[in-house]
Length: 398
Image (cartoon, rainbow, N blue to C red; front, side):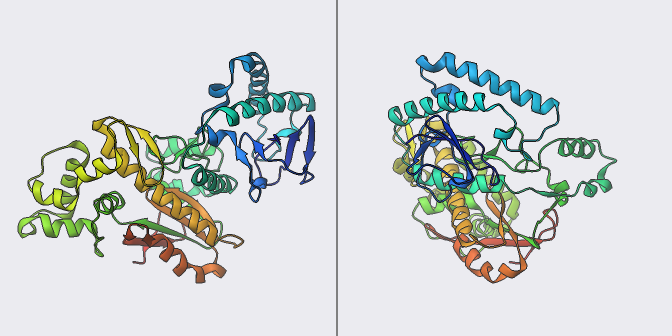
């Protein structure tokens, strides 16, 4: 039973079904297939066309016989969006269906229904569809959480041109994080065009980001990619800092610093540079075994059911980065489940770390959260835990 959501915000509950519009949970029984997720569908079993075609756009998947109709309604949609922008009408603060004529909604949703039907009938679902569905629910919930931004924190830096430019940019974008789960081949998250740029925001100015609750708690793997490669090489995880562990075994008389060892291993790993301790390094990190296990000469197939076309130059990089990214994202989903129904929430995910916006009454959950994050399918990963009253001043607990 095909339907379309009319908005994706918590407060904007509406669907199109069989030529009619339905609002505020008064939905027909049995609706089960639509284009994309909305937060009010969280507890429903629904097939999503957008996920089944691995994130392709409606433009990309529209069949030829619908292209003229789709172009017509899509151009109208773009005109509405331009008018909202010029009129300074925020879609963050308004329901989309309250801003456009009902006649347009009915036509737009019917064409969208027909494209969705085409996708669900003609595209094979990706092998990691279940994971993509769960990840979508988490990232969409994050997108509904307004960031607590204090631009006064820029004041000590305003003598710098870069700081003034960032303040100007932040004042003109939406204070919400909107992730794109299909933004990279490997599955690492990117942010959409009008998102708060949390992944690229300079560390120097991170103090502008404050928790909505009482405290930020950041969980971050120590040497995530190296630990992933070690695990895929069927080696045990060291309990200590992995870069110091490498230094202990690879640096004669410990002449090289931790940072020098780290740089030399990554150069060997991703740039194929010869390492002075090549033989020992290959025994620790078995690149050949990993390539043989997860790359068939054309396609990388990770243990998380992600498939990525790759040549020899990129294969190892994709295996490690994709496996590491999916490991962290799966842990984010698990933490999201622990926090369900609580006042605390996941604030955001940045590369190898997950940041929790912790409410004081949920502090008893931190042991469960840390244990969940640290205990991976590859063994226990040493985890750094930092806390702070803003994102720029986190202090390490352990």
